[in-house]
Amino acid sequence: MHNLELNIVCYLSSGCASEDQLRENINTALAKEDLIAEVSFLRIDDDQALELGLTGSPSILINGEELQPTKGTGFS
Image (tube, rainbow, N blue to C red; front, side):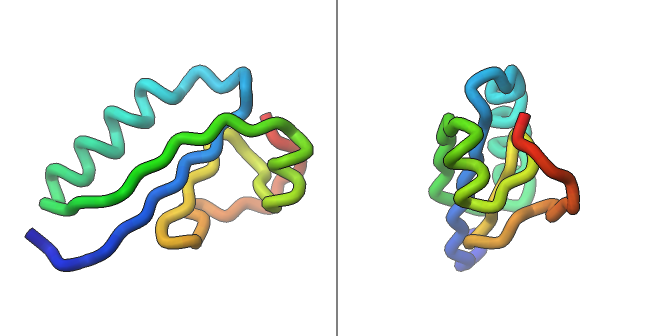
């Protein structure tokens, strides 16, 4: 097992329907790479997303860094 400490935080809008698939994808990726991570799934509203600077749902942060930074606007 790798000795990396991973903290994955997934922010989802209230209407985002991808949580089940996202959970499956993350679990598959962690298993394939033989990694352990603390994974959180948080439902947030538009105001919270704006405060956090998130532009899409889901938004995934690994150790505090957004997985796919985008230049878009709005949280949906």
